[in-house]
Image (cartoon, rainbow, N blue to C red; front, side, top):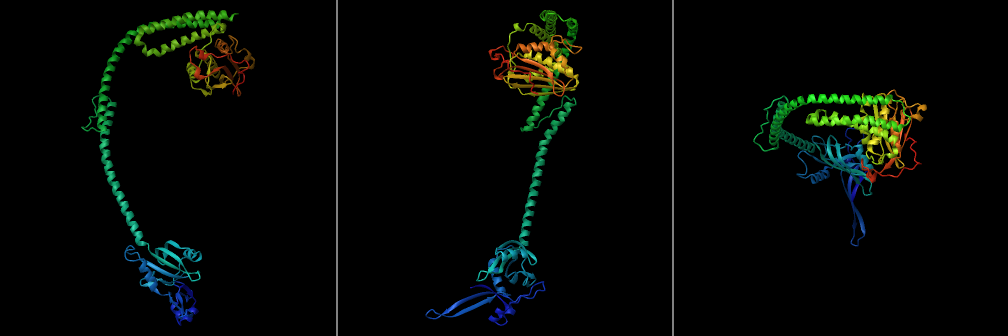
Length: 548
């Protein structure tokens, strides 16, 4: 048993006029009618008592234009309650791709007999033998459809079986559900918005009161308060704390006014004393300037040691007077010295700096008498402090300073001595730049030593002057004593280091200082401790090679 495709002649041979019953006109085209038939056929043998075949009983049912099978399949598949109202279930039998039996409506009361399936469905089902499931436009409406190939008794594809139902009711149900969901969301948003507005108003009212009080206080009002409500929430607590803060501010303001009046009286009393002390300080500074002028104009002495001792003697006396007067002034002024405490501290620091310079002259003259000790671990900080001391030389902002801190080891030298060396080098570079140019400050570790580089892009030093730059009293400028590089040279050499001056590639001056290195973890800055002791550096290590 199975389904077979009969040609017109075979149909008429089976029964006269059967081909005419199977005739199906092609809907909407001029093609000739198709008289082939799609037949459900069965054949059984007729046996005698001995089991021998006497005959064959062969019969079949023509499916063309036979609506009973498709209607029964439709009623079986799409029973009551299986579809939404209005969702029509349909079944179709195809001979090849031609509808020969269907309950798909073409018009009211007319079935879509003789219509064809789409090329896409034909290709997938008839040519490839695969089922097709999906949304399809069937005759005149969209259906959710399924197509399967029909095979004859020999396994050949001779047609298709289709079933499907209208999509429109399900699309409408989807739209209705989506509309209901959107409406519910909008309603929920409206309710949440109203709730948020209510919460915001309850939150903003106390904040608005706080803002109004803040503006009133800023405008000078003294009695404005937030006045919190009876609640115990965070905003009420904030308002109470805010009012308490305003009360404390008012009390402090009254105390400040009283203290200011007392301070005015004290300042008036101390002003005259300060004027007298300033006059004495001016006389001392004038004496120091006169001594410095004598030092600049004195001819070079034959013995540098005698000169250094004499300079130290002449300068230390007025410095002692300065320090003594500053101590007396601070003691006399007491708290009234607070407005000028920064200037007093600066004056003391500069006096100490002068004393270090004098001590440097003595160190240069008698290096063998000075004990070694101390170390510096934070080189960047020392550089920055030195830049502050030399700040008057970079006023105007025309000098661009580039820093490159690569050294990780400490140096075996006291911080005051190293700062004096760096201050001399940086001031020389800044003076060479004349307020405009570029200054490079670099540190690096190199073979057990620390290299410090100070370079500038100024006019540089002429080749004929390079051999004499470390000579005492040698200078190429109209101002200056010519002792800065000489003292720096003596300090560096005394600590086992080297200092060289050369020409920077691209123009300018390049000063390189090499000092013995010490692990930073073992450095106790400013202390003459065993941790700062280091063997003398190898004489084979040269710092004359620049890292730039």
